[in-house]
Image (cartoon, rainbow, N blue to C red; front, side):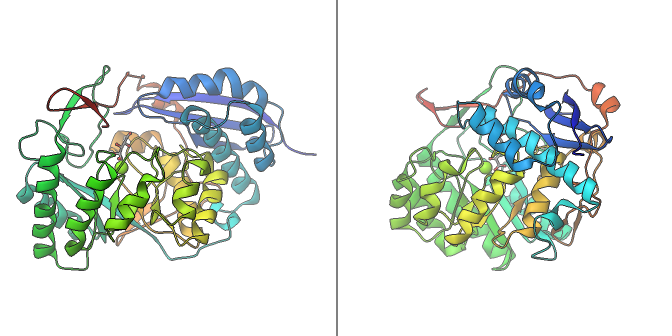
Length: 404
Ligand code: GCO
Ligand code: MG
């Protein structure tokens, strides 16, 4: 007889920052976990799960992963959106974890097995000054990283995206009510190529370099930035413009061969269908927690594979080790893997989410344990109560609201 889900707990914890985790338990005593963290809007997903999803899960067969996905997606009537899709992702991820444990196999084996030996990751080199960022890049290189994302402050601006107080554990959600940042496209466009010129001069051609524009430009400005960075051969320029306007990317493409990576705020295949099928991007950065779980993200990556677009999943610290574990099982198995972002979690976070994926020689290696190979220590989690924290907002120097 089929097993049944008998319990579902939504666990909110804040070991340094907020995380929402779903834990499902079956009648046979098998448990599975899924990440449901939506930075700055955590409680909305927690309520969606507790009030609208959990009651329908009790009694369901945990092995019916696709059917449960369709039930939650089509059954809500209101389709898509980050809150809905993060809730569905948590359920889907937990069900894959359970399936792996029941089968006695790590999830990547259920997805078709290894397509590579390790998952190439990139770290974040952030600093106020160009000299400071050179030191940071050197530190990552010495740790064995093969790819580094580089952000520095823009001279003349009070705050800049990506540069926080704590270099290793940058977390933008720093206040209950959003803190305010300032932006100047002119200053940024003049400064950024000078940073990459110094970095290439110092580190040579091999290190993969990335840069996150964080949705701040118009398409023509992005074309100009991409062109000015061409001599430094970036692996990608990330989120050059807000991606609601998918056809805007045509204009960027007409002006630059700097590769483009987009998708950390996407939650369904429909957000990137045109970007992928018109080959307007090179990397799709959707991730397990915000894009409907392993089931839906694999669908996005399969579409991307048809058009030579590779994966580049988001892996900031606001995605818990549960999401990271799940991402690694997908990364190691899909044919069109590109890169995986890896911002290390703090020791407190790692203690709340015991896991055994590990960093070695520039690669992350997924767990070999049955399932995802990650759990949540609920007792320890309970010692870190929720603290409201919002992402910042951004204004131009004259006070106009701008994308952050
Ligand atoms: C990245 C991202 C993050 C986001 C953060 C928002 O590329 O890692 O842009 O730093 O800003 O995840 O919650
Ligand atoms: Mg980003």
